[in-house]
Image 1 (tube, rainbow, N blue to C red):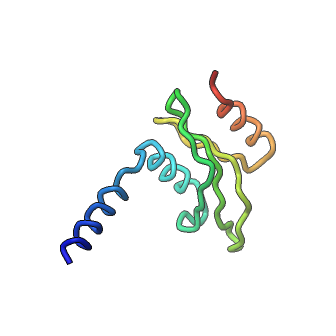
Image 2: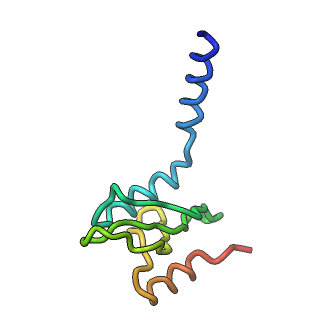
Amino acid sequence: MKRYAFLLAGGLVLAGCGDSRLDAAHTAVKGQLKDPGSAQFQNDRVLDSGRVCGEVNAKNAMGGYTGFKPYTYAEKQPPLIGQEDWQAETVADYCKDQK
């Protein structure tokens, strides 16, 4: 029984080891959505500059998922979600791999 308690405690500690920048980005992006609870994230990455880039899918006002859209977030700035083509291009520019 002690073994299971140790494994459970270890799992809880590891579950809390998220990247705070990703957490902040997800919270900010969810704040821009019609249904924040439906948000699904994929391909998240943190650039050397600290900017977070990824894709988000969420339900629209009609209750249907919109499909994954690119997003970017930088601290102290509102997130930008590429709903329209021009926005997606802007997100892509912000999220180019740094070399």
